[in-house]
Length: 77
Image (cartoon, rainbow, N blue to C red; front, side, top):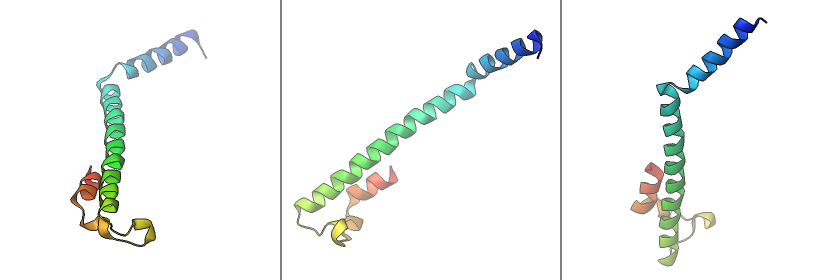
């Protein structure tokens, strides 16, 4: 491989990291981590609220979480 071809390859990689698509992809990755993490937390809060009210836990065959709006908010997040 010639020195000129190697230089153009390095330049194309540098250009790829300076484009708008890189920053869009980075922001999508960070925001998706936030939304996935908050979804788990919100659903867990809904399940804990149901267990305080004496509902049957989902692991024991209960489906009370399907009637809880907090659990649905976490799922839709």
